[in-house]
Length: 155
Image (cartoon, rainbow, N blue to C red; front, side):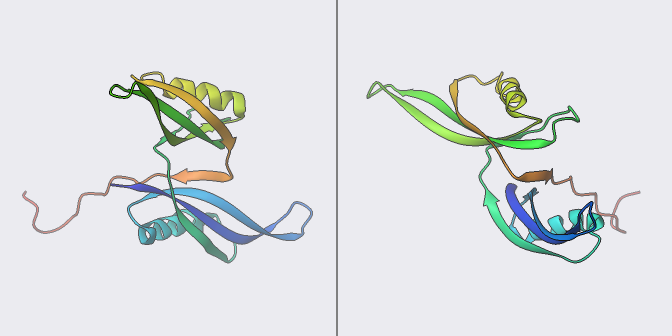
């Protein structure tokens, strides 16, 4: 089972005015372990780095779901906290299970719209607890492994 990991990279960025500024960016990587997350993250960002860089932090990200957008103007990531509401029939009380969902959008209004669209098929009751913009620049999803090529394959 794969999980999401937040990976931070620090590097020196040349600004438009020619000054060099130390920059930190956060990315989300789909992996099965911290080791795989770091390896995949370095493979993904290395082509875009002109100089030296360091992976400064890797931590588990607790997202139940990632809702990507097909709209190219949706260039930000928002963390939506959603409460699923159930009724405890024995006690007659309402129970809430809160989960985080990552939503791609260009602003808050679009994030709300994209979240509603993504949750449209949900069977149970739910409500939005909060939506906040994250510092995540991009996500790197795992790709299916290629079939091994070897001599043991049938003709």
